[in-house]
Image (cartoon, rainbow, N blue to C red; front, side, top):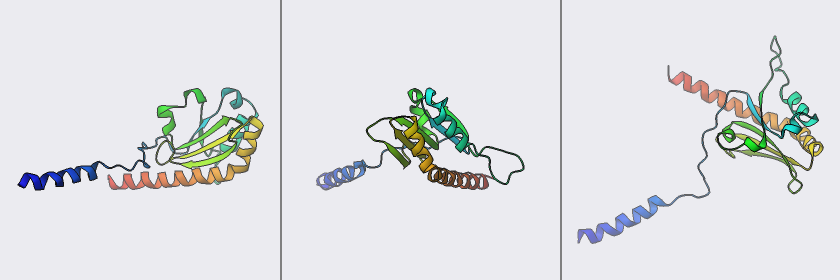
Amino acid sequence: MIIKNILPLLFSSLIIACQSNSSQAFVPESNGNMNALTIVMSKSSWGKNLGKQVQTSLTEPYEGLPFDEPKYDLYHLDPSIFSGFARSGRNIVVFNKDTTEQGFKLIKNLWARPQIAAIITGEDDEVMSFYFEENKSLLMRSIDENERVEKIKRMSKSLNTG
């Protein structure tokens, strides 16, 4: 008798406990040094005007320091090796050559959390350069805010462990 009453209760609690929200997939913690920025771009584009434009724009020096120090440390990756652990960086800018979905997309927590991923797609370097230049200030503000939040997080952790 007790088993007849308990069995449906156990079964229903098991069903409720096993339900998962499929819209929230597991996303690993992001990693990387402060002010590190991963640029995913073909080697040919990296050595040409597009790569030089990105490097010049994103390594502008911090204002107010007595010496010039670049705002971001850039790490170039070829798209062929951009997988697995490489995708867990906190700040990533991906350049894709494609004619179907051209444009600029800024996505939070795409491959890791917290993360800012910018996907710039164009049919050639010139088009990707245009989308980068048009959205550069939005990209930099987003990365700066992401880094500010990470600095606060790291400082609060260090204060609590002392």
